[in-house]
Image 1 (cartoon, rainbow, N blue to C red):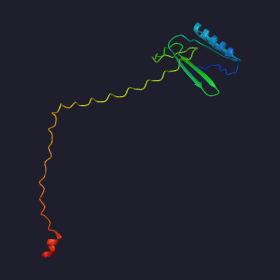
Image 2: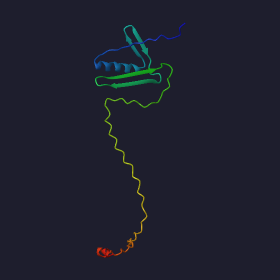
Image 3: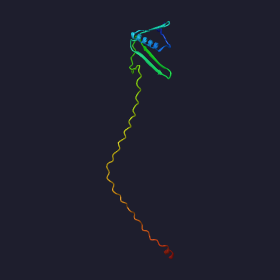
Image 4: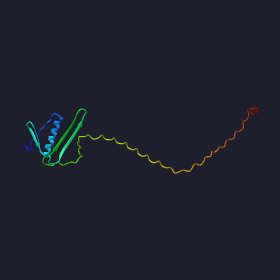
Length: 148
């Protein structure tokens, strides 16, 4: 015998005026707050019982050059509680945040302090040492050379 519970569900995809989309979202929200969400389309219907413990929410927003999309995914267990995981909260508003201010340029690293030299004594005056110059022998004149 098959012990699996039969799954039932309703799927709805449509393109419509945006005000109508918001109306559907409002109705979904009101039904979830009431604790019973019943959806019916044609011969398919499903009744969900949200609000009896922790729930999972997944939100994905995408923006392209010619199209934007928002996907919202909710999951919960009707009777057994799922473990609630703490995560960074999602901020939802009708106003875009201000543009981030540019980060100031980091200050240059301080130059290491120059080592101070101990004061030096004034240098003694250098005196030029004269090298002894060899005395040149007097030249004999050309006339004296011829005599010899």
